[in-house]
Amino acid sequence: MPGKVVVIGAGINGLVAANYLQRDGFSVTLLEKQDTVGGACAMDTVTFAGAKYQYACGASVLGFMQDFVFQETGLSRKLTVFAPQHPPVVFFEGDASPCYMYDDIDLLAQELQAKWGETGDVAAYYADLDRVVQFLCQGYRKAQVPTLESANKHLGCETVQLWISGSARDLLNKYFTSDAMKVFAAMDVVESGPVPLDSPYSAFTIPLMASGTIFGGKWGFVRGRIWSISQAMHELNRELGVEILTSAQVLDVSADSLSNLSVRYRRHNSSEQTLAADYVVFATDPVSAAAMIGQTKVVQATAEKRMLGTSGKLVLFFKQPVVWKGDSFQSEFDVAFKFVVSAQNLDELEAGSQAAASGETDYAPGFCEIYCEGAAMRHLGESPTFDIVSAFVKNLAFAKRGDELPAVQRIIEGKILGFIENAQDLIGSVLLTPKDLQLRFDFPEGNIDHIELCHGQTFFTRNWSSDPAARFYQFGDNERIMYCAAGSYPCGSIAGTPGYMCASQISKMQRPAQ
Image (cartoon, rainbow, N blue to C red; front, side, top):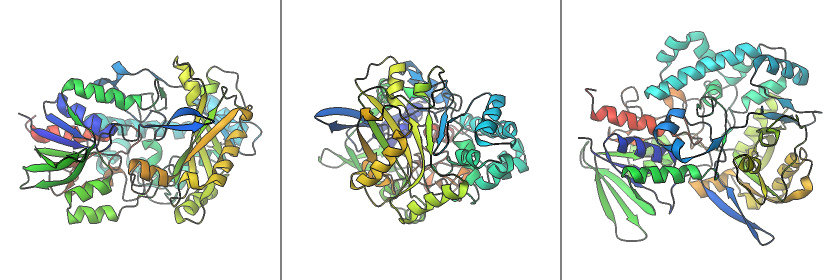
């Protein structure tokens, strides 16, 4: 008979882990310190001229999730989703027209040569990228621990050296000739933190970020906005019988032995309560998790991790639908993902990232990933009374909140508005910096992935286990205490993959004969 599991943290990974464990026969209690579930799938409101507007203050889009997680948890029954079919639109500052990142490789190669002068082997790059992505996805499905040995076996040593253990700069220099294409491909590497492009394993982030299967490697939108995902998971888990306690502040987790665990917590400032558990799963930030178990080695290892985030978010509100420049006059141009890129080459891209990391500047122009949320709402059949555009922004320092940086806010606004025909329809905007993300979501140093995707903290090293080969998601020395939040393999971005893989590991431990 499976035992009792306490999951701490009701972000996407905690919700997914609870879902799989409950369906596998465990009795699951989910503790969340906020008064609602969802983690970074969260909504906030802002007031302009007396009118209130809702916006996603964390994640904006879905895409890193595996389709089998979407189906097996029941999310597919609860949610309506949409991925734009129009190719992503890339605006480099100073260029006369944008570049369209077509799915058709021949068409893409022609576009890249015409717009950016690219003469490299575009087809080989995307073919090799697909091979590595397929390898990663097979591992996700089987909940297999990632190792270099398995990667070498399936991909070959040369591919592994180039795409997993090698540097991003070497990878991109092999396939591409143009600065623009190298910068576009490298944006994934420095997206959440200041990872040096010459560092080992920096190449791995590129296939990692393309390994979501819910939209075939693309990104998309959810009817009802992104927080509908966590609301749906909350309903699904309750239907399964998961006990969900919000406003539950966990005080500590203790172990009388390897198999006797207890979780002490308090709700609504009431008296302390204790839950006995056979397993405890942390789906929180790693700093909080380490403090709760109090193991010296884990606390020290966590303190030594690189956790700095250098990305933020600018949310813009318009009174009329946004009209973008560079219109392709193809269907869904309005809702296509768009990029505004300031860095002209890899050195500029990295210099801006490092300048923000060091605190040398509050903001260094890098790039903005733009999500046309209002247009997506209309495509999903909603009728918003305003338009909304969310821009994921590089490079912002950690020191200050967005409301302390009005000049920076205006600069970023100006970069985006420069590619909008009806800029006069802007109502206002909200800037969220890494400091805001830390304060809102407990990201230790404002990194959306909790820790950086850098050397020593990615692929098979992205864990806190004392025995990763046997129990990858173990957190410290106790084999019944697990960790599966964004800081574990593969990473965050509303995937739920760590939650699924961790739950699978627990089920396997409970039934070793199977």
